[in-house]
Image (cartoon, rainbow, N blue to C red):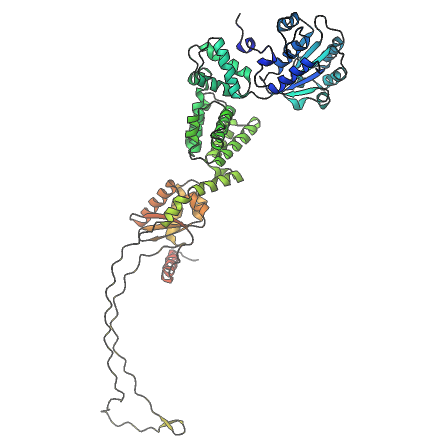
Length: 567
C-alpha cells in the first residue's frame, strides 16, 4: 500500500529533524541525563515538527537502549510506539476531544501505571481547542502528576493557551524551516525515491512550502505523480500556478495606471468564476514580493512567496518607487479585511482597483507621498522644459527714424501794422518805475510730420480674458473630472503662436503636464485661434494686460447687454 512521502519520511530520531537544532539538542541532553520534565508545550506553525518531536521524545524516555538521547528504534518499546500497539503512549486531538468530560476521563486513567513502558505519555495536539472547563480540569494533574506520567502539548496558536497552563510546562518554540534546508531535504527524498527533481524545481517547492517541510513533501508527492522531470515550469503547471500570469498582468495594468484595462480584466476573472477575495489576496502576495525585491534585491530571495520568478518581478518593479508598493499593499490589505462584511464584493474590488491606479482618489497621507514622489521623479524633465527658451514671434524691423524738420525762426520784433492807427492805451504799471507791454500773439510753428508707428506686438490674452475662460471650459468638458479643479486654478495667455499655461505651484503643474491634457488644450486652442498653436507649461503669474487691452475686454463685455430690454 502506497504511503504519502511526508508519512514515509517522518524523522525517527532527533538527528533526522530538520531546522530545529535549538530544540532537539536540548531534548537529547535531557533524555541522556535523565532530567526530563513532566510537561512540555511545543508551539509553532504547521509542518515544523511539533508532533514528530513529541513522538520521538515519547520513544526516547521509554527506549531500552537510547544512544546519546536518541531512541534506538529497534527495541520492543520503540517498535510498539511506532506501530501504535502500545496504549501507554496515546496521541489525542483536542479539536475533537475538547470537552471537560474527555479531560476528566483522561485524568482518571492517568493515575494507573503503564503496562509495557516506563512512562505513560499523553500527546495532546492542538491543545488551544480545549474549552475553559477542560483546561481547568487539566490543571491539577498537570501541576502534580505521578512519576510515571508525562504530558506533551502542541499548539499553533499560543495566545489561546491560558497562562495557568503555560506556567506548568516547559515551552519550546519551533521555527519556520529555512528554504535552503527544505530544498536539501527534498533533494534527498527525491534521490531515495528515484524522482527526477531539478535544482530549480526544488528551490521553487521550498519557497512554496512557506517554512513547512510537510507541505514541501506533499507538493513533491503531487508533482511526482505527474511523471517526468520536475523543474520550475513543471511545478507551476502541475500546481495550477499558471493563473498567476493573470495576476501579473493585472499588476502591470495597475502600475501603468490603466484603470480601464484593470476593470476589464477583473470582469473577465469575475465571469470566469474567480472570487474577488482571491484576486485581492493574489495581488497582495505579488505586491509583497515586489516590495521585497525592491528593498532587498540580493538577500530577500529567500523571503519571496515563490509564485513568481525573479525576471517577472524585476520587469514589473522597474522604475516604480518603494512607497508606491507600500500604498498598494496597505490599500489591498484594508480592502481585503473589509470585504467579508461587504454587501457587494465586486463593487468594493473595483473601487480598490481605481484607488490603486490613481492615488489621488485615496486621500490619505500615503497617497499624497506617492504623488509627491512622482513630481520629484519628473523634476528633471520639468527643469529641462523650463530652461528651453520660448520662440518669440517674428517681427519686422522698425523703419529708421525720420529727421524732424527745423521749426521756423521767430522774429523778436512784432510785424509792422498796415491797418488804421490803433488808439493808444496807457501803459500798465506792474511796479513803480517798470512798464509791462502786451506781447504779440505767438506764432504757432507748423506741426512736424508724425513718425511711422512701430509695429504692434501680438495681443496678449492674459488671465481673466474671455479667450482663456472659453478655452478652459472647453477643455473641462473633454477631460476627466480629476483634472478639472487643477485646470481651474491655472491661467494662460497667447503670444503669437505660443500658448503658455501658468500653474500656481508645482503640484498643479505635475497633474496637468501629461500627454492627454496637452493634446486636449492644443486642440481647443487651435480651434479658437484658427491657426497652429504651441504649448508650454510654467509656474508663476501671467503678465498683466495693458490698459488698452483691459478697455477692449470691458467694451466687449458691455456689448453683450446691448440687446437686453430692461422692463
